[in-house]
Amino acid sequence: MTRGLRPTLIGITGASVLAAAGCASRSAPVPDIVTLHAYNGEWVLEAGERAPVGMQFISQDGYGFTSEAAGKIVGAMAIRTERFRLEVSDSIFRISSDQQGSSFALPIDGTAIEVPGQDGEVQSLTLTWDRGAPVVQRAIPGVGRVSERFELTGDGALVLTRTGALRNSGGRVVEAVGMRELFYTRNHGSNP
Image (cartoon, rainbow, N blue to C red):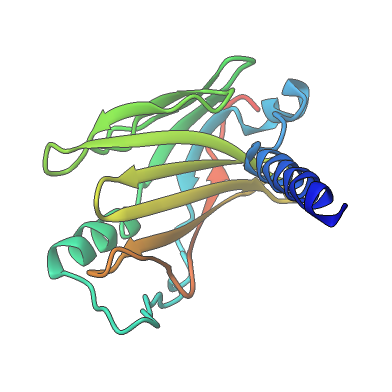
């Protein structure tokens, strides 16, 4: 009797694990579009930007990082867009800037798009949601990823929080310790 029960238990356990993994991999639902209209407008970097928090990549498995990969991630993390226009609609999340590589339009449903990177490599951009705030994830092939979370504050400012992850020479992705925050205010005359 236990022989017949064992495959059944394994099947139930396997199905439970697959169901849990499926639920965990779903992205958060898109917030009500009316709440996202507050993001629309032109944003300008605050003149007295706070010093960025130092970020570190600490590989616990004994593998280091290539200087080329580290350079690409550091370059992506260091971008400081002075001014950009943000538009959110029921289908598109669009950032327009005169800074090279800082303009894109992403489907609001999380569909990935491909864009050219700094060295001509194809990068993948995806829009996800974290507690109602939009998060743009940029995957740099073979190197890692940079995430930018856009959050409106109670006083009408926009905080862009940038985090990163870097692939070490052993192939493991290592999350950065620390983040970079950029603070933006709405340009006067810009529509909310």
